Amino acid sequence: QVQLVESGGGLVQAGGSLTLSCVASGRTRSNYYMGWFRQAPGKEREFVARISKSGESRYYTDSVRGRFTISKDNAKNTVYLQMNSLKPEDTAVYYCAADRSYIGTYYSPSEYDYWGQGTQVTVSS
Image 1 (tube, rainbow, N blue to C red):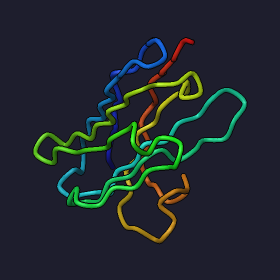
Image 2 (cartoon, rainbow, N blue to C red; image 1 turned 90 degrees about the vertical axis):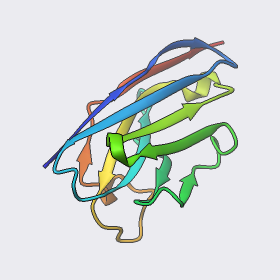
Image 3 (cartoon, rainbow, N blue to C red; image 1 turned 180 degrees about the horizontal axis):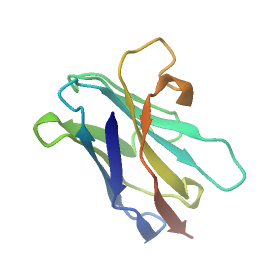
C-alpha cells in the first residue's frame, strides 16, 4: 500500500502561482509513475500532468502545457506541481496519484492505483 498526501493548495489571484506537493509513504521502495488530476464542481476528474519513474518523461494536458511543471524528488518520495499564470478555470480540487505499471492510458484515472485526498486550488479573477 502507498499513502499519498497533498499540500500547497490555496486561494490565489489570476496570474499568480502555487506549488503543490505530494508526499508518498508506505511501499515507496517500488518506484511509481506519478500523476496530477483535478476535479472542478460538477465535472469529471481530469488529467493534468504525469511524470515517469525516472523523471525524464513528462506529459501535460493541453490547457496547462507551458504554465504547469511536474517534477519529482525520489529521495524525498515527493512529486511537485508548479503552477504559474493561474486562471480562474484552473480552480479545482487537485489530486496526486501513483501508477505501479503503465498500461497505456496515462490520462485516465483508471490507470492509477493510489490516490491522495486532494487539495483545493481556487483562482480568483
